[in-house]
Image (tube, rainbow over all chains, first blue to last red; front, side, top):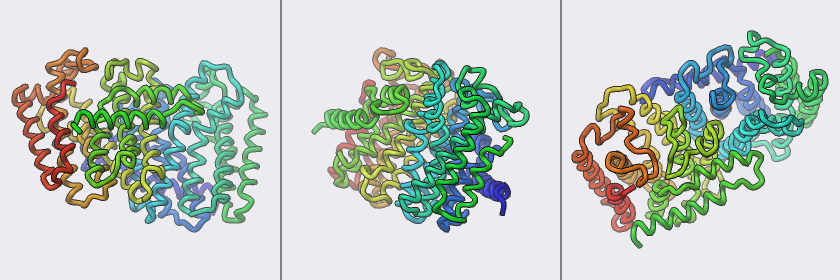
Length: 294
Length: 294
């Protein structure tokens, strides 16, 4: 099966699982759950769940068994988008071609829906259905909390906001990327490795792969932002440039940025050399990172 | 030892633990950690940690062993205060006699500090130091996530915001209280029971106690809000009344509200009848709920 077909197949499974889990039926605060559904059931690529599911699959863990952990991760990703879009943060009105949560509902609902999606992620991970072994479940909790907390994703967003008023340096931009988007992409492969009971060395290689992939993705995002219109990619473009915020493209120029992305992809694929054909889906994901059009 | 002395002693232990855990040293985003410290190291009573520690103590679990779970709970309580105070939510400038986090820092920092304190709670619970048994740790994660998520505290805050524009009914006000503040107070006793490996029946009685205590506390808060000045209690008063929001006092009148609070305390103490002298601290906490002056 080809990469894009498998990406779509996994996304359908993730959408179905989230659709069932995030339900307005029988709850006390239906508006809150409606906003959580709106945020979580958009038309995302579900890249992080894909990486988690395919990493776990390398160790013989089936898609169904990996779905709860994959969906918990996607809840965290969606929470971060909802909060990052808020007026006090990046102030975005458009996301995945639709009004953002605070535009469609209101700010208070968006804050609470984000909070609730983050909390739901940990509730999902702690549930018996996620894994029969409590030690595995608690390891998933710990890894996710570290990835998205103040020394991870949230810290990256804090630095990203501060960067609007700072002179641009490549090191700063790399640090922000590695925290703001890198930590959660690394978590995808880390969590897949936890589910698969991978060795420490295997886990390190998979996390190395994910770090390179994440950086390639970010550079590709910057290139798309530089070259595309908002109609094509479904969100506001050129925002970073307008805000005077450094991007890999503004720092390096488009050609050097593209070359850097290609190097990351090559290094990501190198990191998988010990896994043989079982890692072909992850290799395809790395190539996809710089070939996509949105 | 008397109740107030033990409350102060536990609070000192909680403050010390949080002071060490939430450190700016060696982090990538120091402003974020500074805001987390500001939010978590205020002069709170640490009532929820107290209840957790004293419930665990009934089953022979020492204070040191209960501290991580107690501090995780306090992180969630502090996160909820930071987000509830935001302009889009309750829009408060004053908390515990100091400017709120978004006033002292800014809104974006407050949103991220809240997010990060919530995440930190789950990181703490998943750490080996919290309990040697992974099954206990994951049970604490699950209980906390349920207590503070969309069907718990966050759902209560959503309903509380909606209540500003709704006609006042006692049932609605009770539902909001039971979710917004009740769930986390119940979690304190639930988590203590988890750490103590309490039986199902014991756990049910302790959670029943906590539910009654939480309601008594809320009514006492409404009475304080009705009768006090902002200088005494360190936050804005009469806000609910000004916003046209129902409180137990506005719905029942001060006398009937006070009588209701006393009934809750009596019922809370009744729920502890099976525990003998070991539950004396919890009984004292119930009496304190309606005797405090702030």
